[in-house]
Image 1 (cartoon, one colour):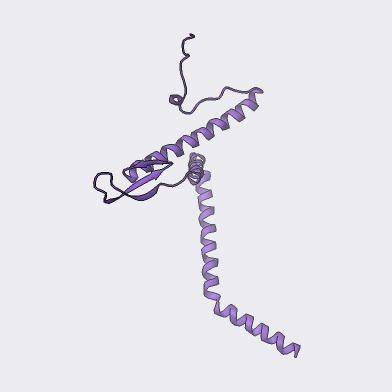
Image 2 (tube, rainbow, N blue to C red):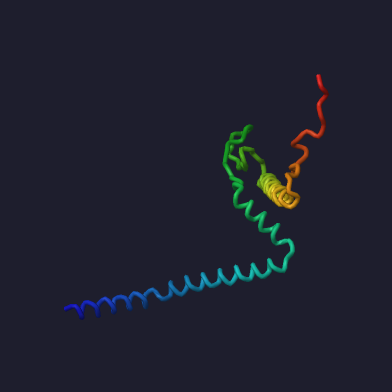
Length: 147
């Protein structure tokens, strides 16, 4: 009885493999194509001197939220219109919202490199370097008069 049960399980397993061979092959081909594309991208990155900057911007883009399209009633007519929301600010066009998002992504990437310079240069010189501000418009550039 045990031998016939084992043979039935083997036949059932072989039937399942034959029935599912096309989806299995498709999944394996997709995996192989992704792996090949990743290796080609690594090869191209090794030849490109700016690939590190591009990868940093791509990483920061993953961390910043996307622009949301929201349908709201128009202030004048009450008809539904599409507005674009990014970080709590409303934009009339997607282009304006995407430009604001892109500016934030570039600013965060620059801050990353400034922090990186601060860390590595302070190690090299054995002392802490003053922090450089990415956007000087955000900070005072003059000393107010004493009162």
